Image (tube, rainbow, N blue to C red; front, side):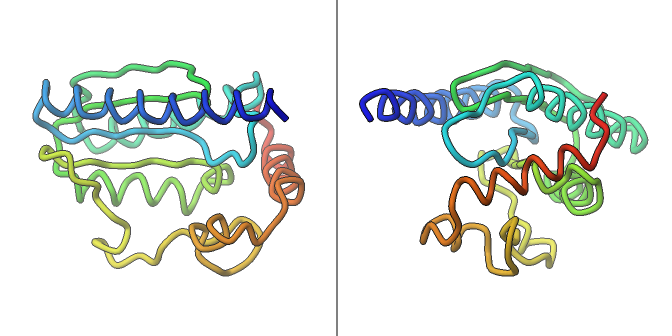
Length: 173
């Protein structure tokens, strides 16, 4: 049990460091920030399969930005206790970027596993509801993902089975 507590502490510390990085990038570039991680339940956040999924997501994001002639001003990719992280500062309106990122999340086979946050130049989170989209749905049911996570509606095992099914259904290599 002590080991799990330590892992949870490391994940929480990683979230704090991610938020710090987000603030620093917004303060430095004064532009839209994309912060990209994966929706992986439980304490195992880092493995080679998850890294491949994350890399695929970054590639998709970069391709969409290029198609729309959106300039990437800065990009950092790193691995933390909370999993793979990518930060892209882009020269575009945050609402335009949110439409692109939600399209990837909603339409790509791996999109359910992508957690792509968009912040405006003032550091404010750009929400799905701001572009008339509902909150993200749970991996397993039609309820809000946040509501199910908060109430621990589903077991980590059931959620991980769904994550693994999504990954296996998509040929990652």
